[in-house]
Image 1 (cartoon, helix red, strand yellow):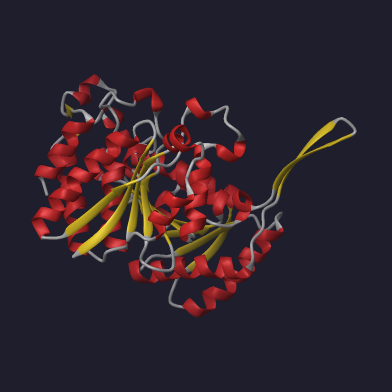
Image 2 (cartoon, rainbow, N blue to C red):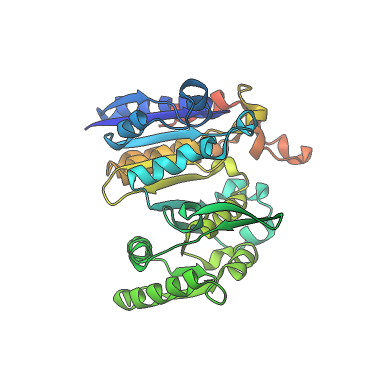
Length: 362
């Protein structure tokens, strides 16, 4: 198989984690006789420094014409004072919209050898935690109108949160199809007791559930969902929700795994093209120090092979190599036990070291 991949290193720790993911990709390429053509483009702060904008139209077109995009991380305090429309994160929004990436997939899975690292260790040791958050990615308040007004010397800010039924039905089908494939229950999260967009969301999801009568379905208010993810995370199979709620809940849920550095994500369009990235940020405080955990990026690469290229065997090979590395006791600093009585059972390694071990386990 031959595929063209656009690689965006981004800012902060982005170049480090991307470098290690590419090492894994090259091992897969060699082992399974594939050919992956890589083209590097700038986005975020790196693009602002070079071109004055967070994503150029030319680089967006390169992403759109590729078979998939692998992203590190964007942003950092260096660009805090640029104009709002030119902030690094705006490049990410432009990329999502331009590529039609409307479905964000974030698996939340607790690895047994890392139970000690979870803030919910007393809960996770009793029940398996393995669910997926499906987040609508191109609608809602992030893509609505934003403006400031000044009336009678009083400042006012306005953010519009639009959704139409087609956008909701589209993401709903993704979630229901995933629930059917994975044989998991589906929970739709909204705020239908307050927001009109959520009233429409609930109406569309309830109607859609009638087409998927084989799927166990329920709906839940977002404030209750935020509590239930902590109190009883094992109840969930698939969670589907709108853009802002999904942004918040998926970051909350990622902590269950013991470190946000472990969590991958995929952003998908109607075709097989997708964008894959770890959910953590650019972590400028540890950039260049070989301390960052590359596993979230490596698992994002595995998601690329599975969802965009239909290479299930290769994706599973990467996932098993990661699990084996964890089982063997290797730990980056973010997943190293703080208790010295426990930490002496494990081997503290750098970003470059743990990725080399994962490659050797493939």
